[in-house]
Structures are given as structure tokens and as C-alpha cells.
Length: 197
Ligand SMILES: Cc1cc2nc3c(=O)[nH]c(=O)nc-3n(C[C@H](O)[C@H](O)[C@H](O)COP(=O)(O)O)c2cc1C
Image 1 (cartoon, rainbow, N blue to C red):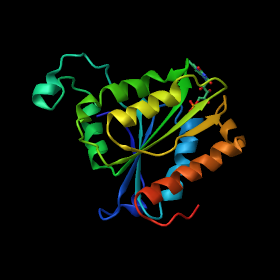
Image 2: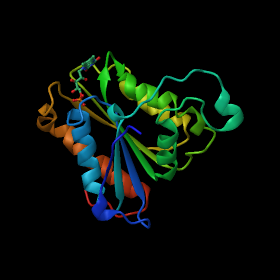
Image 3: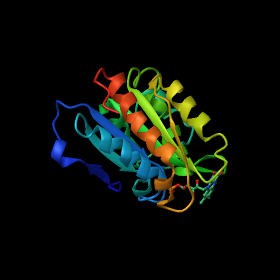
């Protein structure tokens, strides 16, 4: 099966809560993935972390057949059922994506629409956060992220917005770096841990 999962093997320990990062850029070392790594790195002392790179996954668009309404599973035989399990196992989900044409990447959008079967409270109470990076005009990207977590009934943390174009440039966006550490602090607070940021 396609789809790389980057695990922090040093901290694999089923007693620790899981923070799942979902990276929606084609660039695995791009700007949004860099900020995601800042957040996850801040949390590794207390949490297990995993990163799913959607570029490694096969995710078809939803066919609108409503099969999942009756059966709780999906007719499309791609990587999404596995990713549903990852979402259900996670205590915290952080989505990271570039802004593309004022929205999100089609990879991230396809992932989001295919989590439709997880609404109706299945992720209720889990913590959600997001990272969006654009060159200048991010358009509706943050609104799409906000609406997503609302639809799933998740506890929403303030998102991170960064500005950069070429990979690596995000390191110069000090505000985005600060917000990313702040997102990690928000995760800690939401889960009742002391904030170290
Ligand atoms: C197809 C495409 C569309 C883009 N659309 C936008 C956009 O609407 N607004 C924006 O601010 N940046 C836009 N960008 C720039 C990317 O968001 C920017 O390069 C970002 O840093 C990429 O993140 P990544 O390194 O995580 O892939 C676009 C880039 C591409 C390739």
C-alpha cells in the first residue's frame, strides 16, 4: 500500500497520546511541512507523533454514492480507510497545506472530502489545528480549514498562517515560526498539560 507514515519510533508508547500531522503539499520538505515539523517537534516530549504525507497516498475523489451512509465503509479501494483509522486513533490532528489558487491543494481537499464518513460526532472532542502557507494571497484557505474542523465537531485551535514561496523561505517568517510554537502550546493546554512555550 502506498503512503509513507513517518513515526517517531523513539517515543512509540501506547500510553502517550497521539498527534497526527497530515501534510498536503507535494513538497515533503516544503514550507507547510516545515511548519508542521516545528509543531510536532515541540510536542515530542509529551506525545507520540506521526506524519502522513498525502503525496505518498492514493486518494480518489468522493464518488457521491452514499455507500458509506449505509455501510460505514467506502467502495473506493484506496488509502482512505487506513487514514480514517489514523484519524480515529489520534487525539490531535494537525493539517498542513499550501494555499493553491486561494483554496487548498487538491490533495488536501480530496483528503478532507473523503473523511465525510467521520462526521456525526465520530471525531468529536479531538483537537484540531491547521497550518496554511501561501506566497501572498491565501484567499479562502484558512476558512476551509476552520469549516472542516467545525463540520467534524472537533475542538479548534487558532491556526498558523505563513508566507513563503520557494521551499526553505518559511524559516524567515518569524511570525509563522512563533505561531507554530504557539499551536503546540495550544495543544498542550487543550489536553490539560502545562504550556512550556
Ligand atoms: C499551483 C499553485 C498555486 C498557488 N496558489 C497560491 C495562492 O493562491 N496564493 C498564495 O498565496 N500562494 C499560492 N501559491 C504559492 C504556494 O502557496 C507557496 O509556494 C507555498 O510556499 C507552497 O507551500 P509548500 O512549500 O508547503 O508546498 C501557489 C503555488 C502553486 C504551485
